[in-house]
Length: 324
Image (spheres, rainbow, N blue to C red):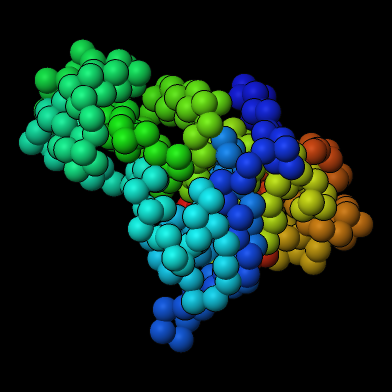
């Protein structure tokens, strides 16, 4: 795990109200079933991360959970409202921040927020906008055109616009793609502050340090929920054996191990190579011919969330290079 980022304390789900409680959801587009028999519970104030390869059903799942798509089968509630009967009410209680900046670049930051405030008929608009500008730390950029903002400041403005109407549920679709590490960390600090105040967050991400900051992780593959839990629980449930190889021979070792029996994934981590499989003895046998090489040091290590993610991608047949 990334030691520089502390694991958040997960809300006590049994003792808290559920923001999302759905059972056996299914969604088809034509002959293709995109989401298959999904059951999920998310507590109020939880940050739930959605991981999976492109086409795994993440976006469709999130949209069903929030009333933006009607499931073909299954039932459940979002914010205490029925997914089918109360879809319109659910949509008025959520904020949705897309990966692509979706506000008016020829308007100022304040003008964009005023537009959103008018859409939601927010009372005392001027005060609500001022408060939000201060909370997001963008008050000194209120009169700057949105199109002139850097990626990090655009992100903050978009977040301000999405929560201006005080939603109970926030959807984030890879919100920090293309944003520098400092801005990403500051963004996540804001998310945790809001979650502590009771905001529930669903976020899709392919950054493992961000996934580690979620209270709960849900991994989808081919429309099915494969594993869920905290970062530590997901790592534990994977039951993989991981070995770390370092030295000048790692490039050649990667080629030799790529199709070796018992090896499920081989991934470079800087100057090191992580080799994983579910059968520890098979992994040991595959590594044995390399153990005597002077240009390699091989040792067993604890699997990280990224090891598990790469393993799950490989198991599902998706290229390991794809984003979540």
